[in-house]
Length: 357
Image (cartoon, rainbow, N blue to C red):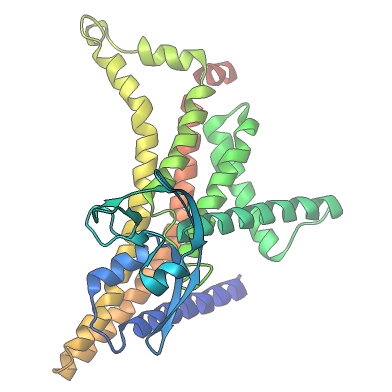
């Protein structure tokens, strides 16, 4: 256990140093803009920025796939946009409406969003995280087939502990009888969120993308949970929503207050899942970046060395503390999303719960 903690501390320190170094490289020899710096790191992008060396940006180009309403399909590298700023009538917009997104420039100079199927930084991160989840699951299955009476060690051992914890402490107690058919989804969503959160803390490729801090991603995860809750719900669940037998009659007739509230609750549950994960991860990234920014802002105010150095040291220490806190958050948010999904699914199976009791 102590060796694991030591290794974790070393990795965390290396991550902090690499973040600090990467940010330092971006702020050298040019005017520092805190807003562009923060939102540039949390925003999606068509290329994967790695670092800057001698004012030269090192970026991994990604495929741009778009369909124009008038000109058809276009497939090209994002490096084309970086070289000329505009390629085949497409460019990255700087307008307030489409800032940071690919737009088609019309003959009159206006900007129109094409159908965009590009492999952006967030999309590639999702593919990498999905591949890692599949690799972990298949590796564990293959190990047990070869060694049915042995316990795995190392990464597979830690992975097995997390699997057993989620199944025994979250899925079984919350769902009860028949939990097996929900286990694959809940385990998948837990490890998908966890791996994306961990990769989001790593400042260099293949990390650094803000996947779970993107509301489109959390909306899809919440939508899948919504389908599991309502499509596989018992008849008694819908009876409780529309008839509300436990509520007094005056809350149902003549104005169906309780049925309306219960029906609204069907949609607020996934909405809460979506916003909770999105807001917590995004806020964590922003706070961490703000303290990183504070280091450089205070260095600009270094005329008074006593104050500048003192506040700079404080900012570095506090930024490191936030990095440690972020490690806890990445596990906690994956756990909370899985727990609430299991609770909502369990509540939709009222009939089966009553049979068990």
